[in-house]
Image 1 (cartoon, rainbow, N blue to C red):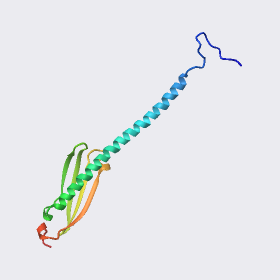
Image 2 (cartoon, rainbow, N blue to C red; image 1 turned 135 degrees about the horizontal axis):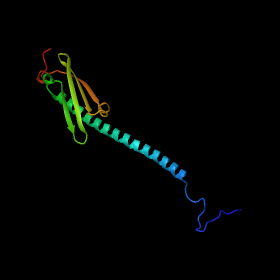
Image 3 (cartoon, rainbow, N blue to C red; image 1 turned 90 degrees about the vertical axis):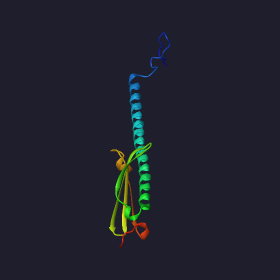
Image 4 (cartoon, rainbow, N blue to C red; image 1 turned 30 degrees about the horizontal axis):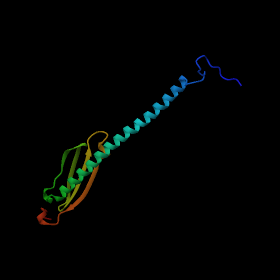
Length: 141
């Protein structure tokens, strides 16, 4: 059998990586890093939308409870912009419609502000409130 010849410094002729092998390894590594970076971007976007959604839900629930505690005759529609710490601005809009004299349909919509956040964080709460006691500010039937 022929042994590979060694030059005077004791190195094999086939030792090490070729330039093509190194370039292929770098390309594979770059594609892997791009995939991981994309996952991080998507994860951060989903986290921001979830934070806005949680804040919107809490603010919509709070507004609904305030409307249910208000006198029946004093309930009205409105909008407010709430600056939520750690999340950012959230818009809360409520409408009160009275299809009949002693019945009110209350709808509260809350959502974060921003092109990528608004639709993903929108929460809508709806309830019907009936007025049954004169002390609650009910109009005459």
